[in-house]
Image 1: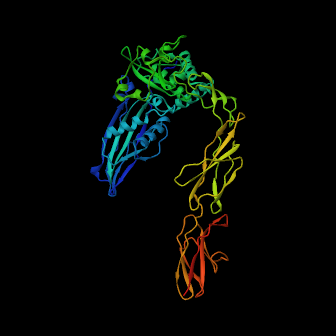
Image 2: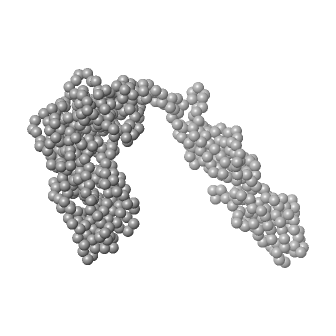
Length: 566
């Protein structure tokens, strides 16, 4: 195949506003400093050295009368420039860098500010390494990290008010071009489609991807040791050119697994003292090792879905123990057998017998990981809770309770209780309303409705309850107190009760008959004045009322109180 020379495709990934201007009010000359930063990808520290990373030229600072202007590097690059951005978190700044790295942009502009004075190299590395972190997106994470050699960075540092500003310029050494990545995206889409992975178990997805790599990609012995040919380390070389070294195998598996919805990572280390890369993939709650480079061309695999106790010849980089990497990616100690220890069932299943409100159903469900199929029961359909349970007085101690019908219900149990009490024995009805009478006067009551469905064998299955708000019955008031107000009027007083809308006062010349309502007042009153005739004895009673659906419901009359105006 055609041999590529070293790709001098270094995009200026600029975490910098160019030009970055601090006015006289925003900064002083002493506040601004310029530093150089460099990072070599640990994955390729035996391949890449400082001379491979391009030095960035920076204009000198110029002080104007209006303030201090700092201009960023004037470097020509192929590709588009990223838009300027100012960020107050490492994660947001890293996301901006990542977005432009994915398109191999020539310039990315981003400014990071913080109230903490932090070491510039630490901040630069945090932003850059965060941009390369695993996100689960196929074209991010390890896919990016294993296809760059490092960066040279320029740092402009200044202070504005309470904030410290860090403006970084990263000149990144990429292994592929934007054009190659576009071709790669097309090739990946076509391959995923040809593998027919839709609706397949995770195991089948992993197996088909692994089969493809082992059958179609060969090891690039022609360029082995040629450190100038960086394409050998890429997924592009593995998929498009069909030949790559171990990093290319591992990167292609990573990309394809994530495209198929299976979590995976690239693992680095050594084999026989030589740098090597392989993968882990998730099946169920565990991750398993695999090495498609070593299984390539074989009809029987020796390194496919292996447990940590059976993966010889691979020595992990110290990075994994130092960072506690595998606490987030729990490894299985034993090989994957094709049957899960803990199945992960697909949410969509085949209904064999549909459930009802009184009978369970049956289904056939499939494990998303291993693909095993099992028959299982389906719970009965849930009877809906009755909505809008209301209780209204139709007599001073009588309630009319109603509610909306519950789907699936054949009847209802209606409970009631006093405030602070317990639910009593229920009434049973097939209607969506009922009456409960002769309750205790002046008490707050609650009502509960529970639907049920009756099976053919007589068994009842209850649904969820619906409750009313608390409602008072009307209490019989104590007889009112009466005193003289003037030569023609008396004042009647009473004690208000809860739950009422108002009160009526009646009078009569006879203690036992002939009472007529002489005054009606709202619940805000506790007394009222009534005209009276001197030297004649009158008898007075009072009762509460409540307005329900625009109608008055009256409580019982109090005992009488007599009074003669003198």
